[in-house]
Amino acid sequence: MPVLRPQDNKEKAFGSQYSKGAGGLKAELFIELENPKAALAAMEPDLEANENLRVTATIERGGLRVVFDAKSVSLLRGAVNSYLRLLKSVESL
Image: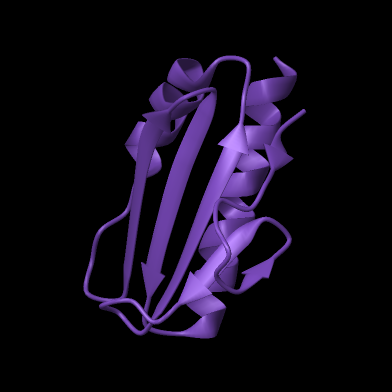
């Protein structure tokens, strides 16, 4: 099961970090996974980049870092929820 955990002392909510990004709002998640390469491979077709939302993912020690940059709260929330559901389904396989 994915584990969300904060990475530093900045403002945090449920293991994520929120700040103003280039698009207006930014969320950064680090998710501990047994197989981050498989998770990244599953995410790659869905990684988004447009003028309203940008999502990037990188493999780091023991997990996956996913960064969301959106122009609105609703776009940010929808993207975070979608990718967390995807990662949960990948991890359960």
